[in-house]
Amino acid sequence: MMDIQDFIKKHKATWRDLEEKVAFFRKRPKEIQGKHIDELTQAYKKVSSHYAYLKTIDPRDEATLYLNQLVSSAHHLLYQEQNRSSQQLKYFFQSYFIALIHKRRFFIVLAFLLFTLGGAFGAVSIAMDPLNLYLILPPEMTAGIDPEQIGEGHDQISEPLMATTIMTNNIQVAILAFLGGITFGIFTVYILLFNGLIIGAMAAVFWQAGQTYMFWAYILPHGILELAIIFVAGGAGLYMGYRMLVPGTAPRKYQIGRAASESLQLLLGTIPLFVIAGLIEGYVTPSTTLSPEMKYAFALMTLALIVLYYVYGIYKRKEMAPESR
Image (cartoon, rainbow, N blue to C red; front, side):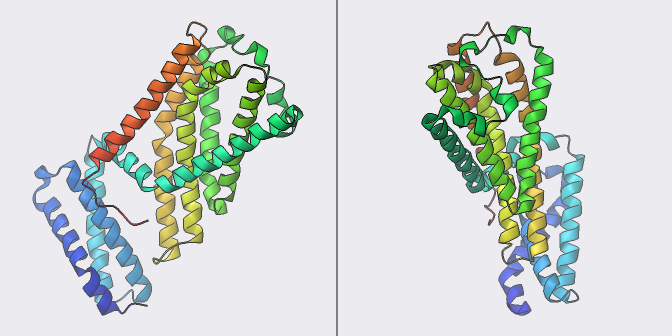
């Protein structure tokens, strides 16, 4: 364990930096900009971890008491500023949410790979034996699959009701993927594999019937956004499970709490995307007036917008110093 004096020498400059930022917020409030909030947030998180570490060694040491006061001051200023700002939601979705996604991109990519693995297994299973469909999919789902009637009857569906139902189902899947983190990520892995399995199996059924083109025309317009959401929620759950297994150098309780907070923010950031995806699946996907080509074009546009949103968010956050995982 590092000696307290050595620890102070190593991180004293970081504490002084936070002190200066706190003084700036107090003395020059009219000059505060978004980048200043970012910088204060970064410094606050770093010093908070130092405080948590010293508190476990000697809660009555002068350095521990000093950090307690400094962190409390920074916390008050930071959240006071955020709560007062009418731009809080804009700030979150414009840069902070994307910064979280970028920061946890390894786990989000892992969620994508697990989903893809499930999809590949489902497709191969159906290709080997079409009857495996009844082992993979729930009975109520298999009863409604008929490649020859794809798209039929959609003109008689209530779009608002359909959009609401789909939105609710997608939120449930994402929440389960997120909450699976408390099982050390095991249930999250299951959710990702199982949902991939279903998509892979259905794709294989429509491929065998020669309806692949139509199948993806009805899946991709809403599917790209929905899958992006599930990957983010799954990545959040996987990261939380990872921190339960590997808490790092800071106290386990602190690391798990921090991981849960970040993961919850990732999940909350996807809520507006759920609404958009539900509207697309309720109105665009079942449309009989849009040709398959138009639906493919819509899907490509959705993908392009997601990429542009991500790139723009990273650009807005480029001045932030990267945090350690």
